[in-house]
Length: 598
Image 1 (cartoon, rainbow, N blue to C red):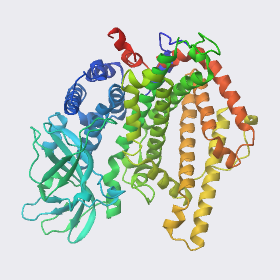
Image 2: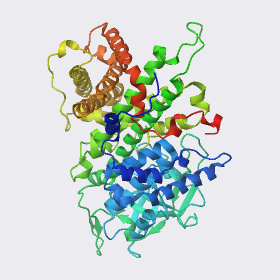
Image 3: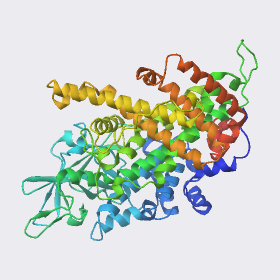
């Protein structure tokens, strides 16, 4: 299983997908150069963070303007993908800056919005951050206790955190010397009524890093999982001007009357969360990027490496099925996630239009865009599992030679909660499925087709659709039965959360396999065997559910294992070509380069 020297042109084109052309890709390479792929030794935590933000400023000034990137999802995702493989912390602060600070200002601010804040973010004179989640309650974004009240005397607003349990955490605001501009999510109370969750653009640290009156920043302990300047923020009767209100068409007239075209506080919450699609596209794309990088690193570790085991001394490591299947499985997962990322980069979502999505019980994300939220959840899980496998199969060098695989794993772990908690997304998806809320189950069709040939994409889709349909029907029956027996909605659902998560996961599996099937139709022929292996690995992972639902017969898993071995035998000679098509920077695939000064 060799590394290969040149990428398969067709596969490289598939990996690039809808990414920008060569000139813009070169510009992004200049914005995130190879020196950003490591840090010098001896830095304190604050020095490390300061360097990350200095690199963010350099990247932002080298890349196209932020508002242009927000209008061009493939371009923004391409920049963020390169940042993710270079340094997950850089990806995190860059994604916050563009999608969760500048994004709401551009989307909701209008021409009379906070132009000074927008200019500071566009020029990289200030770094963007987000104040949404509150530390003391789960699902706090549904009803923030941070309150905004209109101040008739000044025409502006007063933002207030009632107690420490309502402190905004986590935020990236701790570094004492760096300017920060935050988008603050707060409940607007006016005329004695809660009017919904709105966003306010607030400088929380000035040009020299100083904290203005009315803002209290409490630094969090240092962490190595994703090295950012975490802190809690409390707003203590903070006065902000009227234009800080990202009102999205809402207004308060001179007589104090309130008007909101969204129509209701619930609809306003969905509108305010409408910035999420840009986040989800970014996270899905980054998940694909770090999975590609991890697969490339594992192949680099494995190729040409001999073993000294007594079973077969000097035998190449990749002759062992466990290592071979790990390498090829990682490559297959990377190609599948790349197909998903290409799909979401060009897809228009419900958040791009005024209409909302289904009703939600646990979080607002499904109401913004159910499928995109679900793909974010699925992609981060796949990335986390694949990166972790690559770390383990890279042995001690993968853990100790460089921080990269550990950092990738930290990023994937972080975004299983950040950007919308994965479990809550699954539960809301399952609720919509059980209630047929803007959801149509797959049709029951006789099968499997093609005599059950496991190499047939029609069989993959049949198995995924049938499992999803049966799980949905069983979930709906159990919840309905509990309600008919007198259970309240909480009890009816609380007793079925395991099945709910499995049902939503089955939906995510089906959507992902459909995306991969569509990629086969328009992609290069070389893509078919690698996505076949991905489907076979999916069957092995989900065998318990497929067997439990009666979709497949006993003994079927042995056929899957045999098919996987055949697929690996076919792909093993081409592993180097598959990895080369990722076009990874050389520094990524040289985990022990420090030994030679590389």
